[in-house]
Length: 328
Image 1: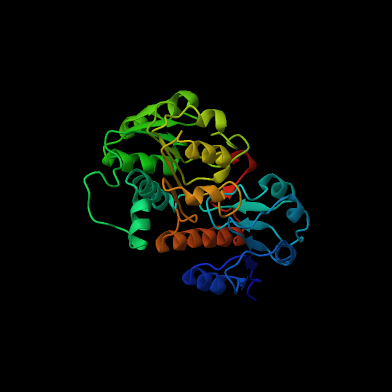
Image 2 (image 1 turned 120 degrees about the horizontal axis):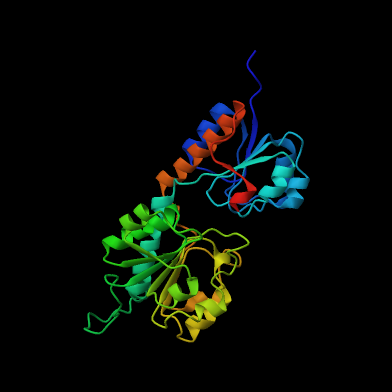
């Protein structure tokens, strides 16, 4: 007799190839509409499934986990970030949590460079003029930006993505600086030709561009607060593709309006999905709808990792990408 297949609920539409493979392997309930589940729908899913496959748009807090059914034993997150899941409470309930690290490293690092160029070369302003049909022709002083070559890049968070950004930025001729919870090994630091700053305050005060690449944890919430942002040079640019909560968005908005920062490139936002409305009207701000990992290849590889985590769990083993509370 074949063993009973795991019941799996997927909270959002995933790439077709991923959904098809999940259906082949498990008893899967897929989402018809590509909209986030309501809290009630999440409760229903967690009461009926063996495995829940959520995304960053699903807040799996202690209240939800407290209503989970006895069968729920794995939350296989579709995504590397897991700050939307109360991992500690899940662990207390005997529910494992896994994620999909590493597969979108290059995609996100590419987007960091795109945002750097977008802001420093005033691409948003050029697009706006062209789309409005207002371009009057080339002029020697029109749309003057700044080059990346020779600029100092400060990387906040030198993990996989931070290091991928460093390699790309070096190819543009930038000088690499970084602040990290732990200093890199000498051979890694040497290969990246990166300068370590133990003091984040001292680093941000000297950088031309600051790239935020650290996760959101209790210790990184508003790591870039109003006081620290005030240390940056008025000519500096800030790029955030990590998590919106790391950056005090209201303080950033005030500084951009006052000309105390030269520009910002944002793919993530602190409050909701739209960001501070005032940012949308600023010509020196490039805003994207959380597109850092949005490549067909990356999203498929994320799904493959989810499948491996579930299959390994189904076979009685620890998921290879299990998250533990100490990681937060």
